[in-house]
Length: 402
Ligand SMILES: *Cc1c(COP(=O)(O)O)cnc(C)c1O
Image (tube, rainbow, N blue to C red; front, side, top):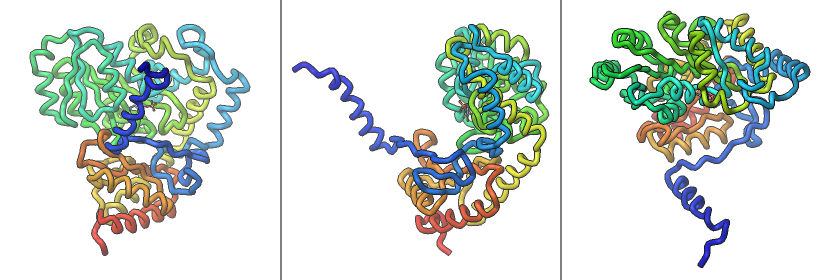
């Protein structure tokens, strides 16, 4: 019997059933306010420990005004890709300011952090004689970029510098045309920091260049939030700095900061840059206003780190395992999918939102809740969250009963 036209897609129901049985099916939660320290999610007001709104800028009046003004001056969209006629002066101005921020000669903005990573891996690793060397816990966009690159890839165990050295000493590396080491600056699930000094030393010794994805470090680490190269005093020794405008900067986009040649080359070869339209001018204007705040209000970053220390210490003294975190991303280890999901759900009922992160995003046995504090959380918000973590953690036997 002939299958109906719609019936040809029946495999989706099987796939969805499989995702559900594996605990990988995602249903969307809906935010009904701006992204704030206390937000309304699915009709409930909760202390929000899930966003990347590190510096509490998503609802900042100065950023909002900048966006509105740009809409009035330039309209709502560009209706073009950057290399055709989608580049406005406000886009160029943002790139000048990002280069200054990162301490590099030039910068280039892409539609997102995801697309800039894909573009850099794909455009810089163009031959089978190149070698892309990557930390096993790098972001999905680096993994996908590496898949689109012509170069073979070698993955080293997380932050394992002996293994990185062995790769650099291998015949494939020694005979390679180009070697690129790629690492997240701050790892997004564990909140630990890349050993950049050791990576840069090895890179220089074996003639590799280094690409650092500072999506979670920009606005968080280094002087005025310049990122991990600034944090370690390595700005002049890291050739490619990636940042996102979608996290601490609270808008949308990604960028690469480096030499003028890097910018020039990617304008002509970066496929997302060439074939996908540019940001509305309001996005660029919002980012410019955010950079002004980063420069003029370093106390926001201090508050972010105060809150980070307070919340992390609070979780530890309740008896939770917070893994290897060194940054505002603090995992609360659970070690079981059903229990992590139950933990998240019970906390939500009690007025705290922290997302469960399970296999395959993290390895089996490493299931956790992931928390991110922002500079906007008050002590009262954090004390409330800690009290609920304690209560629900004891209820589910994740920590010892008092
Ligand atoms: C979030 C993230 C990205 C993607 O950034 P977007 O601007 O949201 O596309 C890239 N790399 C890392 C490490 C991230 O955490």
